[in-house]
Every structure is written in C-alpha cells, then in structure tokens.
Image 1 (cartoon, helix red, strand yellow):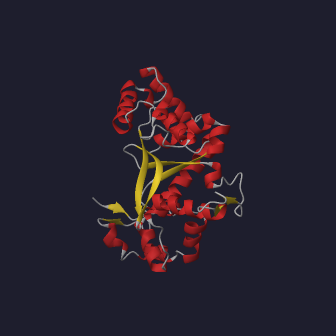
Image 2: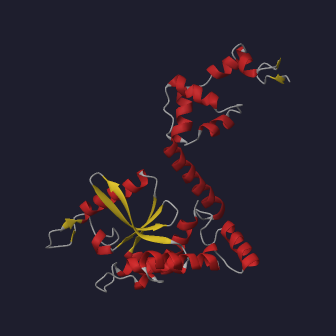
Image 3: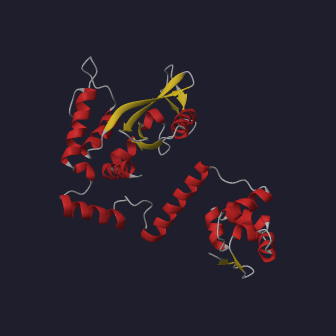
Length: 281
C-alpha cells in the first residue's frame, strides 16, 4: 500500500527508502539547528517525543539522529523519569491545584474513594477486612504482637523511639503492611532504614528533631549529642543522612522522611502523606 510523502507529495511504497532520495525531506532535516534543539531539550525541558510533535514528524527517532549528528547528549532513563514526574506534578498543580492523584482533595482521589464507598462501603483499600487481617498476621509473625505499641525488647522495654512507634501505629491504623527496620549493604557496613512497606520499594525514615538536626529548628553549626563520643555538628549529620538517603535511591528505593515536629504539629497531614506515599505507583 502506497503512502503520500508529505514533503514532496509523491506516492511511495516505502518512506524509509524514499527519504534517502527525497530532496525536500533532506532539506527539511538539514534545516534543524543545534542551538534550537538544545534550547528545546535543555532549557524548555521538552522530551524527544515533545520535539517530534512540535515539528510534526512521523517518528522521534529522527530527533535521535539529529542529536547524534550534533553531539547532543540525551538524558538517562533515570533523568527522563524524574522529568516526567516533575511534568506530571506540574500539570496536576495547574489543573487541580495538587501534585498527585492521591492528594486529599484531588478529583481523581475523590472519584476513587466514592467508587470504593459505593461498592464496598470503604474509602481506601487498606480498610478491607482481608487487608486488616493480613496486617495483624504479619505483626504477629514478625514481632509477636498485634499492635506496634506492644513491640518490646527481651528486657521488656520498647525497642524503638516514641515517634517511630507512632508512625508504625499510623501505618497499622491505615492497614498498610510494613516491616520494621530494613537494611541495605553499604561498603563494609549496612544502612538501617526505619520502615519498609511490604512488597514495595518504599521506605519511611522517622527523624527525631534533635538527633537529626531538624532544619526548621537547628543551624548547620549547631552541635547535637553534646559531650558524648558521638557529638557532631548538624551540618555533618545532614551530610551523613543525605548519603544514607541517596544510597537507598540509587538502589531503586523511594524514601519518605517524616520529622518529629511535623508529626506533633499535624498528625492528620502525616497520615495523609503516608497514605499517598503507599498508594503511589
């Protein structure tokens, strides 16, 4: 079946073969300017597909060829994914005033919750009885108790900080199945992360204001853990925590950091953040 070349308007059976001989097509390709492509790609953050659509091209591989011709470095898959996420959030902000579909007042979330309520009488999947039962079974099998607040050491004392237990309790109330403390090897040691959502790559770090130097309360030059062998400046602690977070992200994990102050100031907002984080694809 023949097609019409939109450049020379001739009927051709194979555009790929024809394009090498079509002078008008070659003139069009040669009209691309390196500076224009770089501006669209780097400054305007357009993808190759965006540029393809802008020039009404049949394939974005033409853009790939132009990039190779001009020596324009293409984004890595990770960089492209971050850009797509940023664009998605920006579009949602412009249209709905929220970054994600699962933000509390987002129309998409309201529609989803309404459907769940109409069909099952619940507003999120973690309220399903089978999910609740599975969450309790997991707590019992891993920690020997039904509730996070009952987790203790062999000495009968709580193993984790109060805010850590509070976040675990919130996850349990939302029927989000979790494991406490997840370790990732780093050189000759391990980084331990507070919580991992079961069967996902999502981690939750619970930061005490003093022990991690909450930037809302401390300056880089402030000292924490004073007069102890572990005394450290807040700036150095931030660096150590950043290395730990970057290590998780490099290994394919997403991390939600929750600060003690935010938990105390607005627990409902923290619950919503955790629910959104757990539900995001």
